[in-house]
Image (cartoon, rainbow over all chains, first blue to last red; front, side, top):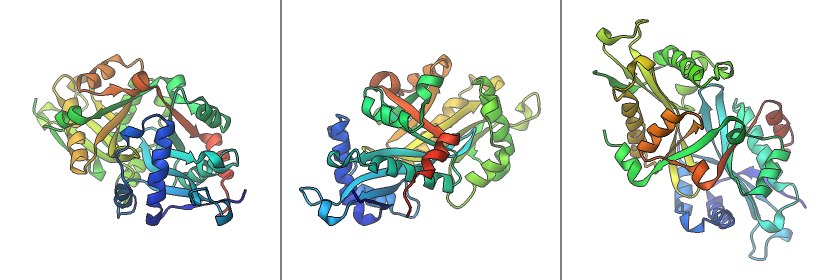
Length: 169
Length: 173
């Protein structure tokens, strides 16, 4: 199937918001999504964006039953390792179920890697839930390593009241 | 002990680089440190910096045995959660051994949280090595949750040749 990958623009935020909800449903956390289309527009397309996006599009004749031609996306931002320097973090990678198995996910991820290398990054990092075997198998088959398993890194988070408390001098 | 937490200036990069090596030594990872103060200067002080940094400074009369007054740092950058929005990621938090137990680590951490809050960040995230009990305890005491333990999150990475191979397979524009 023909598809194209391109940089997201502000008009894509409606479709990206839709697909973020679809991805959260797959990850069983749909009720936790607070980010809206407007947040994406403000946070991704202002002077100092918090993220960048790429979208996968199919031609009109392959659109979904609901009429969508934007059927996948990857959202990423630049990060930094104090040991190895510039890095890129892939926050989301998603392809609508009907369009899987056609190389679109691989193409999106490769594009993030290519953009990262062009920006001087030497790592592409992301996180996956340990029960998500399908995704883990896909990522391992592409050559990624699990640094939680191999090096013992644990992800930690402060939010809500704990973060409020921490931010007080 | 009196100390001050302030944004790092470009001139601080040599001291930050020194402390990165000290932290790497504690984490048994000195062979993995590939960058020097030059990369820090380039990447932290350009128009779209890859990171921001705070340093902790003590007055001259409290300088370390080697004569340094910059005794700690916190290196962080902004990230995004597609569920919750703007976040801040704490890449490094370090205080020289002889200056611990004086609230400097807490001072640096709180300042990062405060800076994040001003930018409307709703999360502060970091990673800790599983064997690093003092650090895990420090963050847990501040209310941090371990998402690897509680939700099963694993960090995956592409680097070196695997990253090159992946990038080479990207579709033409």
